[in-house]
Length: 72
Image 1 (cartoon, helix red, strand yellow):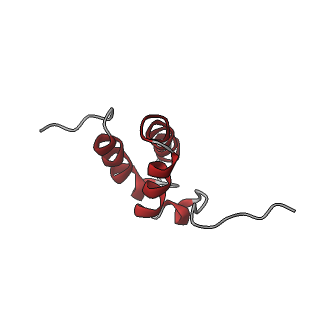
Image 2 (cartoon, rainbow, N blue to C red; image 1 turned 90 degrees about the vertical axis):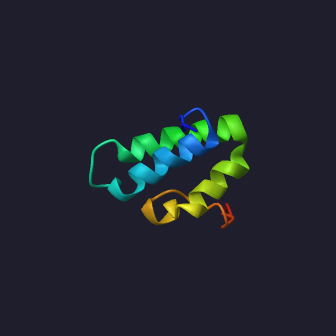
Image 3 (cartoon, rainbow, N blue to C red; image 1 turned 120 degrees about the vertical axis):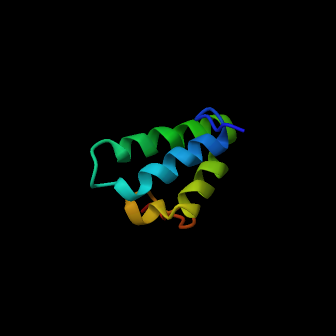
């Protein structure tokens, strides 16, 4: 079975490939952002949030979806 970026597994594979290169290679952050937006659009924001947690993207600058921000 081939994995294409149009599937959830495909977008997660893109993120897996790029996550170690954030702040090292140009565009990795942008590629991951695009993949997360595609996941949210096609599979829902909860799935995008799960991806952020699964790949620990909150350590790379994305907001941690498990923390609720309190607005003043």
